[in-house]
Length: 373
Ligand SMILES: [Zn+2]
Image (cartoon, rainbow, N blue to C red; front, side, top):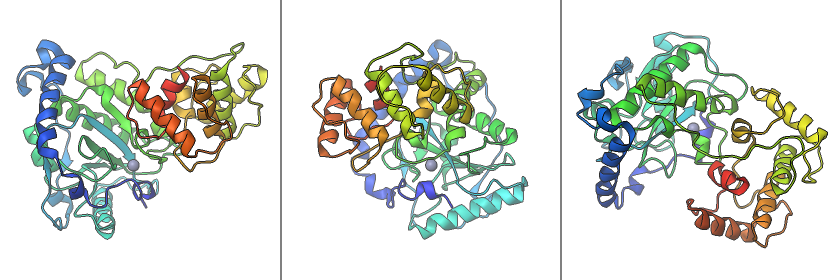
């Protein structure tokens, strides 16, 4: 189970503690700034001044019978700035009981022990029956304080800045049940309120690492999740986290060619000729219909968000041709051969540096968006 977490979790979270104290100071400052920017006068006061969202019931480690952590839990002495959504990649159980939720939590903890981790990796788990459990020990204790959080192990590179929520199930071809979804909204809203995290800062695991988690159909609902959380917080709906171009029939140019390569990556056999004709529209409609989107043939933010795929050095596929097409159009000297080699990586890093992105050479959604905007 949890196949998505295997390459994604730091095997030894303590290894990333170096330098935390200096960053703690910086992040504490940033968090205070975020409070002021996010909520203005009503949000910048004491915590009680914006206690509009009640804490949902969260069963503690003691309640579900967690084993003791094998090492002391590390605490980040600052607030998290974002929340990452995962799915457990376990079966879509029809057992909606609390007993099942508790058994799942114990099972995940044992699984994570078997990976050599000191405790459950994530901070929270939401069962398909809508039961929320504490993940790593001391998560609830730090949440109550609202100014620190437990160093989890749910996404390498993000553990120092994010909370991780595992949602029971596999959501590649179905969406989470309403009771689970509603509890997730409640939990996210409460976490955002407690830690002054804007509703825009809810992400999928795949936004940061090459993984299918939290599944295509759950990932597609993240804009809806952000909006629902914002509504609960009484804040305006967050703007889309990324800006994408809108492409439709009659469009032409490298953006269309890139789109066509992405459609080919997704199984279409259209020619990548840079002209948005009837064949491209048909391929777009097919993709949209297969992914729970309105099949209007117009490629806007929701379609782009689901169409792009994270690619890194070593990938050989049509999506890489899309990257190379866009890089070429932007003046980088790379071959459009579909082979993500060192030359392509160097161009990506250069482009990322020039675009204010994290220069990691990995083409994830943020880099895709900048490439095609
Ligand atoms: Zn995940």
